Amino acid sequence: MTGLQTFCAPRHSLLAPSPSGRPVESVSRLQVSTCKPYYSALKTKTAAAPRLWRGRHQARHSGVVCAAIAPNDRPPSIDVSGVCVDPVFRSNESVVEEEVQNAARTKARILFVSEGNVCRSVLAEAIMTQMLVDNGLSDRVECASRATRDYNVGEGPEQAASVVAKEMGLTLREGTAAVFDHTREIVKYDMLLAVDKFTLADVMREVSVYDTVDASRNFCSRVRHLGEYSRGRQIKDVDDPLYNGGAGDEVEAVREAATQIHGCCKGLIRLLLELEEISGEGAPLRPGLLAHLKGLKEVDWLKPPMLGGGKKKDGDSDMEFI
Image (tube, rainbow, N blue to C red; front, side):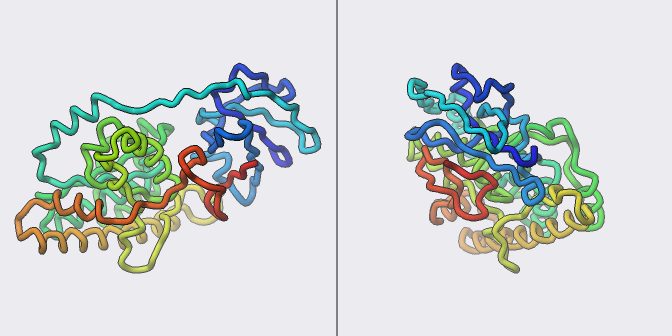
């Protein structure tokens, strides 16, 4: 698709004809302002941005409809002014049920979240689980991992992740990739750690709706960047080592990601030990962890314009908006 531009409209505009009468296909969800015509331009950068057609921007994810046209063609105007978008406010019985079930729970729970739950989050879960055992915290803190996207559901860890885990003396959890269930797991887990800004945005788009309905729940405070807890080299994101465009050694890339995750988990263990000093030896750590999270500044994430986000900053996304 080199040299083409893709003009997109939200999926709820399906009643409108596609530009140039071209076939309609699905692509990943785009940030579309409700106060402008429903169009965005996604410029292809096949060499510089391999993620554009893989992973989070892969065409299989629905959310908008699009049609490709030649760069010199002018897209026909489509009147979508009559398209109404009804707001959906989330109030789910599952959340209430989980709140009742977790009211008396004292054991803290941490959830690591990545895009596919076959590499970074799986390694984070294994590393943190071992560190909890080594520091005598496994009876008061447990962890798990999830995906934000469903295209790896039913698959086990990537081979490169298994190789690196074996090198580090880690045991990866049994089972296959699972998707984050916001209707229950935002309550079931006290701390959700996203490996990068894209994963964080995926989680926050779901979780923030609950706080819009009832701000007293303050679920958004539970979602943080994993990189915030790095006590060594400062990192912003743990980039996906499997999206390297075919360049370099994949195992080495996973090894580097695992090193970054290990540093973040060490910082997280240090936080838990500090909370233990405050709470007292053997005391539950869940109250202290929740209080710590509520005391932090609101996490910075890639908000869509309709939720108060502005124009993208350099490096925030491969998408450009018009």
